[in-house]
Image (spheres, rainbow, N blue to C red):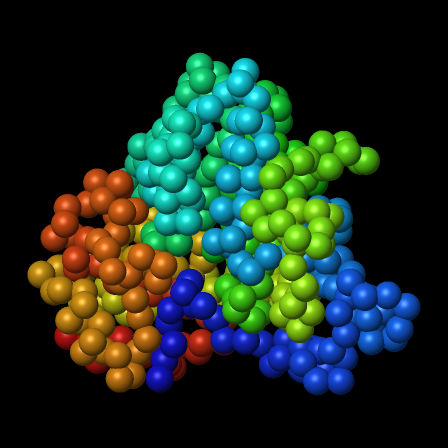
Length: 377
């Protein structure tokens, strides 16, 4: 089986699994307990993982809040900001996002829109990108309580102009959140250079880590003042009162190790994904010619993600036909039962949506394996 659905999830790295195993067996202590060695060892392991994630993302370790993944992080940040700051009668009740966001952002905005907030969904271009000037116009007019724009699109791979957006929000001081799940480990992320980003979400299983763990990055207002929000989970006050619950130490250790490997291998991984993408595109163009058309842009994109249409072919039927030897998808695994809202927002017709598949590569793939596509007619 040639696995090419790495935007849905990745294979856990062998070094990640090795790092996790002791915390599933002999090192089973609760890091919130005190004094005895099992608890202290667990606490040290969590602290190291926090430093590894912070190093990958360019933030302070105490700005890393461990969650179950990006969906929780998105919900936690958006609902938490809306509740904590929107509670004030004088506060803005305006929330801004794009029409091409992940469902965990879109549906959270819709949820808040039903509860007294004004949720505005920006139009996107043909590659699902926002226009910075359009964002600036709405922000300057409405002063939104929170703006959420994803870094890289999970279906077509386009990168939003995050540098420009960060500068915009650094200037106006308003809250800006980005779901960076798909870009971590594939493009450089340095939050110290992007001061306008107050919140960031990520998942471990997109970078060779385990499922069920991720992080919400909550930047401090200053060196000593934390940004407050209402917790999604109340209880024991873990994670600096942001997220209560016993920490899943084994998963956190796995996320930390995956972050360390992603940091070490970033440049090589990016180059390899780009090389493989170009190789596969050449095969597809040569072999299929006018039978296909590409939805993905050729620049400012996530390396290794290709969205294309097989003209006149139903994507579900094609995926089933290929499923015995190639693992592909029609788009986001988080909304697989619905036609792609991303492609629709980008101006694609329902017919074009229903003939689209997404290929997402891994640096572990080799060119010989991709030669399978030469057999598709």
